Length: 112
Image 1 (cartoon, rainbow, N blue to C red):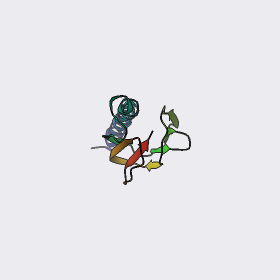
Image 2 (image 1 turned 135 degrees about the vertical axis):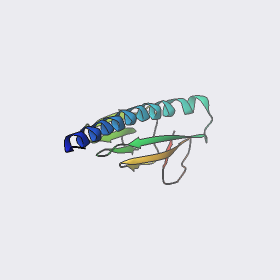
Image 3 (image 1 turned 90 degrees about the horizontal axis):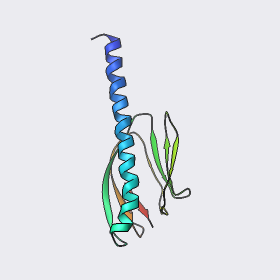
Image 4 (image 1 turned 120 degrees about the vertical axis):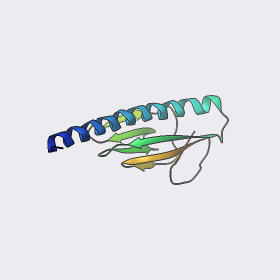
């Protein structure tokens, strides 16, 4: 395989990862919206999210927003009050979204 061919494959895989990240973010925002509507306080849901190389995803309790930093920077304001902060770098994570209180754990985001 030539170097150019390898580069094209890497570029394709990177674009695919960014598209998956976008889809994961959409599901994450929907989960923040739906969990309080469909469940009582103290409920939680799990969601898988893949953060591509060269990106970070921050759950900011100060801004009550998702901050995406990478080749593009984006802020997604949430209609919920985040209780804790969490920063995710490149990788795949199983997050737990906890509604109505403060739960702890390595990949837990609590909100009201």
